[in-house]
Amino acid sequence: MDIQQLKYFLALAKELHFWKTAEKMNITQSALSRHIMSLENEMGLQLFFRNKRNVKLTPAGEFLKEKWSIELIQLEAIQKHARQIHLGEQGSVCIAHPDSISSSILPDFLKKIATVFPKLKIELVQLTYEQQEEQLKNYKIDLAFSREKNESASIDSKNLGSENLCLVVPSNHHFITIDDITHESIAKERFIATNAGSSNSYDSIISNVYKHYQIAPDSHISCEFGSTIISLIKNGLGISILPESYRLQHNENVRFIPLNFTANLYMNWRKNDPNTLINTILELL
Image (cartoon, rainbow, N blue to C red; front, side, top):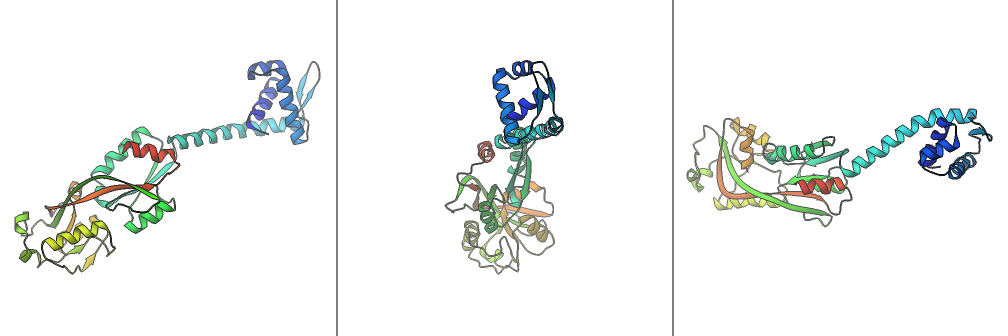
């Protein structure tokens, strides 16, 4: 039994005339008869009473006409939905991103996706670097913006560009410009660490900033997410080093002082992902 046989049956059940049905379905009358007989043989029941003049549904045929009419509509809708998922017109995509791009490139990127795929469901999550790789490999997320290039053999990465790092201080802090930042002045500050001690290239850049100013701060607070760090800075709990894109979040009561250090932004995804939607989104990116 296949979908086409069901369509032939339902067409004949409506017309109750082999010649008219065959013409409507664009097949020969003998071919239509073979399909109906094949369906009856497969199911082991008679669907039509027929003679040279009349065609009439059997009680079993009446029952199946009612049920299959509904199921065929549902099945065709399911097939259409599957095609839309394949083409990226519907379905869902889960994107991990760092807090820093929430007000910079992320809104424009999502707007572009929504314009091309208005029915696509987009889920946004924020994960640690370690969680991103695990969840990409386990198909829990599909794409991951990251400050870290993933070196896994099963994951591809693209460098999207770089931006300045900034020293972020309360707005009433005595640091106004980069000229105010010296070894002596910054050594006295309490730092809020931007990561909970994991080893990655972004942490290496932060370490280079510390080396440049010849300091080794003992961070009393560590946090993965910059928006939380900024709230702590506003409350006088320390200073920190963050990407300049946080400035676009219209943070008040904090000051961003650009440093002579930059951080990269990458997009990471599963290598050779068969999902055509992912490839299309990457092209948009």
